[in-house]
Length: 377
Ligand SMILES: C[S@@+](CC[C@H](N)C(=O)[O-])C[C@H]1O[C@@H](n2cnc3c(N)ncnc32)[C@H](O)[C@@H]1O
Image (cartoon, rainbow, N blue to C red; front, top):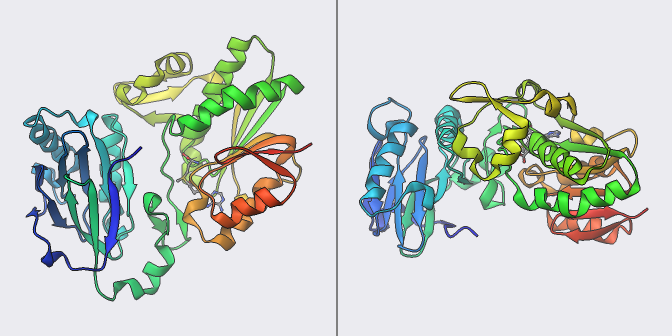
């Protein structure tokens, strides 16, 4: 459970007393600490038990000091070490800057992934909440709203109501640029082996999965690894096929190549699966094995187009719906449902209340666990 709590308030930053850092700086300690981000990005760390926190102000202007993500991480590490705290033992959060300089934010996420630090994205849209204060005593990260800016048409359209998962949107196409990670959703993966795979295997040999909104393919390959491994250890013979679809052709190219820049550390909890299905190409890059790639197909497709036939034993749509309005989510739901076989499974994360109600009351689906549904025969 995350301890950092995001609060968005209408007050002005100037009324707040906190250690104030400038561009390229970092601070750490137990006192409230703040900065004015504008187009920049903040990497924050929080060590809950000692009530110690650290924030940075990454500008991307240069590689010096804390202006770059790597520089900021090195200083953050040093400063937290003074409190005998390792960054890896902290909760890490990001606050993004203006989307005009998304490259700064992307550089930060890349640097964090490189060293295997997982993070939560908090208010990544850079339209109006840009002044922040983090108080380690309470774990509250406060974003101060600039007067009037919330009425901007652009802000209203792009500001997601889910504070945990706001992210950059492509201004032209209104798409989300896809953040994805290997083994991102442990709850989903463990449910697959405990419940879904045994139920599908009990019915026959066919196991077809659709990962809708698969982005760069990390989630799709993670599902593939977990299921291939389950099949191997259960001694069953199954025809496992996984289709990953997305509207981003660029993301799908990465997914099809199956080559990723990932540090060894990022995989540390999954070393057995990784040893079986992933090869290290060089110090920075890994590639999925031909066995794993062999069960995958990636296609450019809008979820709302749906599937012509209900062919899939399992449909997964994770970290997609929450970025959209209820109307759009309803279109997604229709598309997803068109792919689920009778007696098949559906995982759809963070849907709005309306979507959950539709699924609960539609009569065709029973709720198995959080976000997990089973289509009755
Ligand atoms: C945050 S990523 C999630 C990636 C992956 N599911 C995961 O959890 O790691 C969201 C993805 O949804 C895709 N997406 C957004 N709208 C879509 C649509 N209408 N049809 C298909 N994919 C869509 C985006 O292109 C992006 O790659």
